[in-house]
Length: 208
Image (tube, rainbow, N blue to C red; front, side, top):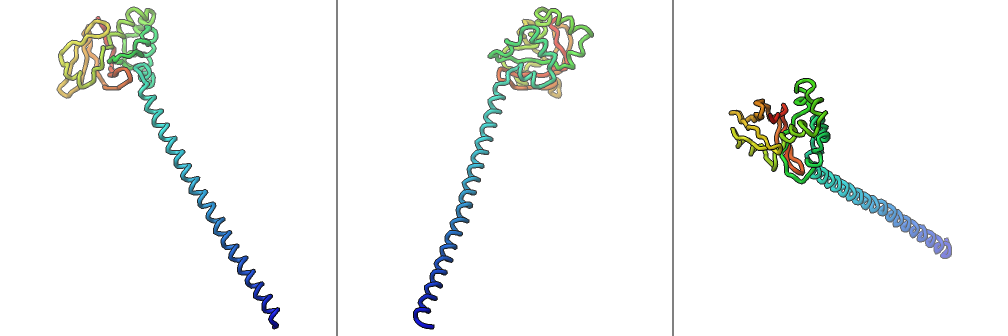
């Protein structure tokens, strides 16, 4: 092989090696780019999810803080009769007010246990006897269960103006005796709302 041929062969080999090296560099760059983009995409997704979770928590807290006595009773699903009666008697706006109020709330079953026809009669004159009965279940201020058990044997004045008597059993159970001599049980306590607290009764209190 003459010197010219050897120089051409060497040139071809050098060019081939140079192209191969360039090809490897391009491959490295191409593989690096998707990895970087994938990392950035993952970080962006995680940030978005965290913001979404934070927003959901804030909304949930705001919604809970906004539940007044009426909204809480509606959401519970077991006070439909009470809510209907409160609305019919024109007391809804009052119980949505600033308060605070303590409501001793009879359940739907408690109203159903009244003598037949009693509720229908009351609803015929909602701003009369019905309003008197409903306000007899409301006490001004926030009276929590811990406060109620300290009132054993004492009379509590209601928004109605009439009183009922608190009875505390040896086992810590609480019942209320109304002005008509009927006794009903407190079956659930301290349902907190934005403008007061609800205690649940298994019967309806009568002011006299």
